[in-house]
Image (tube, rainbow, N blue to C red; front, top):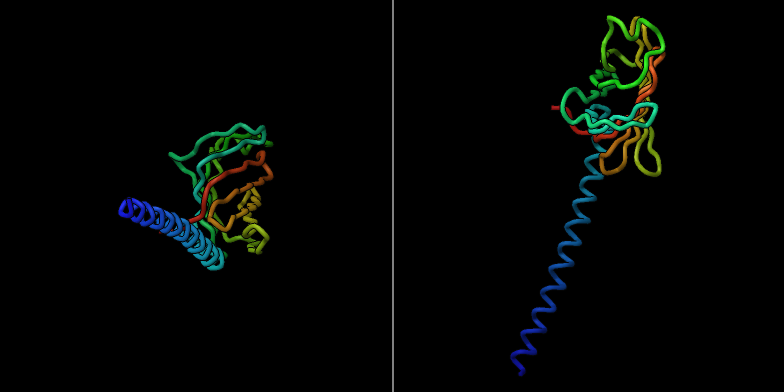
Length: 165
């Protein structure tokens, strides 16, 4: 009887310790992810990789295969995102790019801390177009990107940021 009681006591203590260890390592991973995200955003050089696109009408489209990224730096923004909205001018729809495909040195490039993470704003002008990119980044690296254009309807993308390869 004493052996059975002792075995149950040891089992209860070890189970509690294992749960505490799992909880601790989960919290440690979360803190490490937040640290990596902060360092990446503060470097101002990273890649946004989208997994879902939303048109102005709210329709969602998975974009995990195909072009789905924007490279951010204060010196150059390179976008290669799909576009599922409407063109506001004829020149935006005919003979031009089919997606939000552009690159250029941003006229505006700001990164601010918020209560829930970070907010980046970049404005890139090309010959016939001006793009405003607003990127909200959570502390865990998940991100929402809104792209505004003069010649096209706006688009929203969900994804994450990561270090450029």
